[in-house]
Length: 118
Image (cartoon, rainbow, N blue to C red):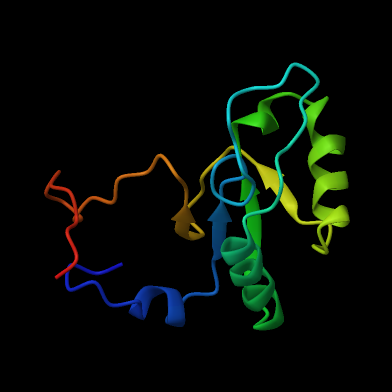
Protein backbone atom coordinates (compact mmCIF):
# COMPACT_ATOMS: atom_id res chain seq x y z
CA UNK A 1 0.00 0.00 0.00
CA UNK A 2 1.07 3.56 -0.59
CA UNK A 3 1.22 6.20 2.11
CA UNK A 4 -2.17 7.52 1.02
CA UNK A 5 -3.65 4.05 1.57
CA UNK A 6 -4.46 3.37 -2.08
CA UNK A 7 -4.37 -0.13 -3.42
CA UNK A 8 -2.55 0.90 -6.60
CA UNK A 9 0.27 -1.56 -5.97
CA UNK A 10 -2.15 -4.49 -5.56
CA UNK A 11 -4.05 -3.63 -8.71
CA UNK A 12 -0.95 -3.13 -10.85
CA UNK A 13 1.18 -5.97 -9.51
CA UNK A 14 1.16 -9.58 -10.62
CA UNK A 15 2.45 -10.72 -7.22
CA UNK A 16 0.81 -12.87 -4.58
CA UNK A 17 -1.39 -12.24 -1.56
CA UNK A 18 -0.42 -13.97 1.67
CA UNK A 19 -3.24 -15.12 3.94
CA UNK A 20 -2.50 -16.30 7.45
CA UNK A 21 -4.33 -19.45 8.51
CA UNK A 22 -4.86 -19.44 12.29
CA UNK A 23 -6.88 -16.46 13.45
CA UNK A 24 -7.36 -15.02 9.95
CA UNK A 25 -8.76 -17.69 7.62
CA UNK A 26 -9.66 -20.16 10.39
CA UNK A 27 -10.71 -19.60 13.97
CA UNK A 28 -7.89 -20.06 16.44
CA UNK A 29 -8.26 -20.46 20.19
CA UNK A 30 -4.82 -21.86 20.99
CA UNK A 31 -2.71 -24.72 19.70
CA UNK A 32 -4.32 -28.17 19.66
CA UNK A 33 -1.81 -30.99 20.02
CA UNK A 34 -3.05 -32.94 16.98
CA UNK A 35 -2.68 -29.84 14.77
CA UNK A 36 -6.41 -29.46 14.19
CA UNK A 37 -7.46 -26.32 12.39
CA UNK A 38 -10.48 -24.30 13.46
CA UNK A 39 -13.62 -23.61 11.50
CA UNK A 40 -13.37 -21.19 8.59
CA UNK A 41 -13.99 -17.49 9.13
CA UNK A 42 -16.73 -16.84 6.54
CA UNK A 43 -15.74 -13.28 5.60
CA UNK A 44 -12.12 -14.21 4.92
CA UNK A 45 -13.00 -17.47 3.18
CA UNK A 46 -15.31 -15.54 0.83
CA UNK A 47 -12.61 -12.91 0.20
CA UNK A 48 -10.06 -15.59 -0.75
CA UNK A 49 -12.54 -17.28 -3.08
CA UNK A 50 -13.24 -13.95 -4.80
CA UNK A 51 -9.52 -13.30 -5.23
CA UNK A 52 -9.14 -16.71 -6.82
CA UNK A 53 -12.07 -16.03 -9.18
CA UNK A 54 -10.25 -12.80 -10.13
CA UNK A 55 -7.18 -14.92 -10.97
CA UNK A 56 -5.13 -13.45 -8.14
CA UNK A 57 -2.42 -15.66 -6.71
CA UNK A 58 -3.07 -16.50 -3.06
CA UNK A 59 -0.71 -18.38 -0.76
CA UNK A 60 -1.39 -19.62 2.75
CA UNK A 61 1.22 -17.85 4.87
CA UNK A 62 1.52 -19.68 8.17
CA UNK A 63 4.09 -20.55 10.80
CA UNK A 64 2.75 -24.12 10.59
CA UNK A 65 4.60 -24.45 7.26
CA UNK A 66 7.87 -24.93 9.15
CA UNK A 67 6.62 -28.42 10.10
CA UNK A 68 6.26 -30.86 7.20
CA UNK A 69 3.67 -32.82 9.19
CA UNK A 70 1.33 -29.81 9.09
CA UNK A 71 1.20 -29.47 5.30
CA UNK A 72 -1.19 -32.42 4.68
CA UNK A 73 -3.44 -31.18 7.51
CA UNK A 74 -3.59 -27.71 5.94
CA UNK A 75 -4.18 -29.11 2.44
CA UNK A 76 -7.06 -31.24 3.72
CA UNK A 77 -8.57 -28.22 5.50
CA UNK A 78 -8.36 -26.18 2.29
CA UNK A 79 -10.06 -28.92 0.27
CA UNK A 80 -12.74 -29.49 2.93
CA UNK A 81 -13.55 -25.78 2.80
CA UNK A 82 -13.83 -25.43 -0.96
CA UNK A 83 -10.39 -24.02 -1.69
CA UNK A 84 -7.92 -25.37 -4.24
CA UNK A 85 -4.50 -26.79 -3.49
CA UNK A 86 -2.90 -23.42 -2.66
CA UNK A 87 0.79 -23.01 -2.01
CA UNK A 88 1.62 -23.06 1.71
CA UNK A 89 4.60 -21.09 2.94
CA UNK A 90 6.12 -19.22 5.84
CA UNK A 91 8.58 -17.30 3.66
CA UNK A 92 8.10 -13.81 2.21
CA UNK A 93 9.64 -12.90 -1.10
CA UNK A 94 9.78 -9.82 -3.35
CA UNK A 95 6.56 -10.85 -5.13
CA UNK A 96 4.35 -10.71 -2.03
CA UNK A 97 2.14 -7.65 -2.49
CA UNK A 98 -0.11 -7.98 0.53
CA UNK A 99 -0.38 -9.94 3.77
CA UNK A 100 -3.58 -10.57 5.70
CA UNK A 101 -2.73 -11.65 9.24
CA UNK A 102 -4.23 -11.25 12.70
CA UNK A 103 -0.85 -10.29 14.16
CA UNK A 104 0.45 -7.78 11.61
CA UNK A 105 0.85 -4.07 12.11
CA UNK A 106 1.10 -2.15 8.85
CA UNK A 107 3.91 0.39 8.76
CA UNK A 108 4.17 3.48 6.56
CA UNK A 109 7.10 2.73 4.22
CA UNK A 110 10.46 4.15 5.27
CA UNK A 111 9.17 5.68 8.50
CA UNK A 112 8.80 2.98 11.13
CA UNK A 113 5.42 4.53 11.97
CA UNK A 114 2.21 2.49 12.07
CA UNK A 115 -0.19 3.13 9.23
CA UNK A 116 -3.44 4.70 10.46
CA UNK A 117 -6.25 4.90 7.90
CA UNK A 118 -7.94 8.27 7.62
